[in-house]
Length: 375
Picture 1 (cartoon, rainbow, N blue to C red):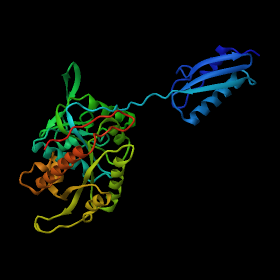
Picture 2: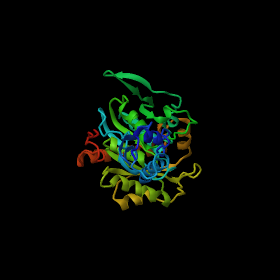
Picture 3: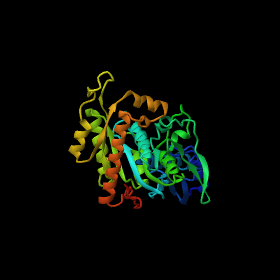
Picture 4: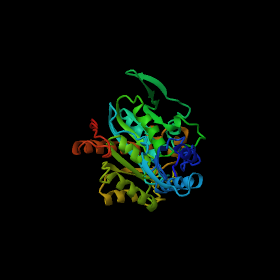
């Protein structure tokens, strides 16, 4: 029996690839159909390497030809996979930015974003040019902490190219996905979409000259972290933790991520947040609610610097909620604590730049360097 190619194509229009709306002929998955008497060869192009999808497509093709065309046809299906490239951030440096500091935490709720915001304004008050990239795509908080929730970055022309102008607040340049979504809108994105958004905020923005860019990472050790480190030559990482054991366990994993051989980002040190509580009526008393010196001991165990501690102070929370970082409170214990942290970060950055070669973006990308901070 001689099989008819047009009849076979018509029969294949009744099949669709798993996860696709169009039938396999309309979608272009069927590349070619060749007949030789009672033999038929179908060349199929798929966009996923998943074995179960490939097997299902092969079985469906054979079944429909046997049922609709000829039950004794000898069917061969050749499957080729060409997965589309994921939108990755390409590894390159940003002209004018001297040092890129990743602020990380293994666990959520330890105050990482609060530390980032207060560290940023403190560095700015010390005379440094500072920017903050809010890389917490799913839970951006910088617009609230800097009281710029209703702000929208404008477009500016830079050398003939249209770029986003970061929002400036308290002397800090800020970009966040929160500027582009409504407060009650959940960001429901897969990794590639999040990477694309980060790509735009990093490379399609007019950051200008910065001594420090602080990157507020989401909690954990996931896809966003890899995207950032594939994108940028991170000068160093700061890990934030509370003293309690459950937070320290995750902080240890965070340090291990940066020290992984394939990542190799220098860890500038660990910061202990919510270290102790001192009531106003008992100024000489310290109550270690979450444990005593847990992050400091972890830093010693891991042989990384301990950058300092921040106590539990109600005004830190209130200031973050009202959009005026607590480190701006002049002549306060909070300001002193953050000034100590900022000096430690600067000192460790200088030491890192003096003693280590420029950081390389994750090895699948290109090498790029960062210049040292000037004292």
